[in-house]
Length: 440
Image (cartoon, rainbow, N blue to C red; front, side, top):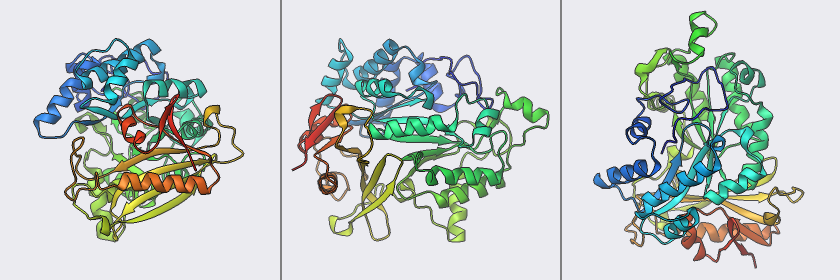
């Protein structure tokens, strides 16, 4: 669901400007076309998308809602609250008087919001913003990292430095949000060699380490300021072969606890004036990786998807890594060939960390529970699909055990509105902005 056109605080030279669209979007992108068709109205966009999914036989009882366009945190909060409420009204098929009422209806409704995602800038994240996002029901935040090189950020007029990203990620992680980063190759001032070094920083720098990532090699369009640099010979887009080789190196280096949601921007390549014009470059890179015997181990590459498995085919694996404020445990049920059927992200704040939200001090945090396989309707029984096989329950039980062994007295979960009932069945109760339970 796209927000109405609204000026973004950033003035990045690679970002197209179109008065008909939120900045960084083009009017002929599929999602942008839908938004424009419905006048950027949140109710109309959400209703139409649900109808379209149901008409092709896709279950729509569990809905992850993505709100994109511009910088979410730069909109007036009254608009933000109205926008989320109207999206929920569409899901609920009834008009509530307030956001809180819409949330309460959705928590028991036939269609439930199982995740709410917004997109904002790192220099907009502070403690007050954490609380506001949770009030809205947000569970995941998308942030444009773009680069971890201050010189490149300055050359491209991003308006913030790398430290702003570090600070924002620390706050978001401690508050339990899933962190979805965007990283761009081929920005002004970057080279193929520096881009690969920059990509490895995403994982080597303990302050970064996002849970999900979109890789967006810069695609040169005529209505971006960067176009003038290209005309003057001050910027050169990478060729298709160069982009493919860089993607192969990056994808092979991506940790197994990260999901590469997207590789290459999803808009018509007829807008691209020079450089890579292959919209299926991810597929081409993966095919070449297979030919060379290279393996991509990110989550998306290993999802069980629509395959049926038995519980006996799955083993629990725990990957542990550090950030600057937490110990992260990635718990996953996998087949012998590492296909993933479900996972949980458990975050254990370091004991010496002063939590930005005092009510979460001494709380372990479940940041995500996700079980793959065909999406089943609410209450539907599994016939070999990963969902409803008890994997989520087993993951939560193990997370509680790990947190208790680490000395925590409580564990919290960043629940979406529509998953409150699920977590309540596992002993969690609403406690302010989160659901929590004691560890005994």
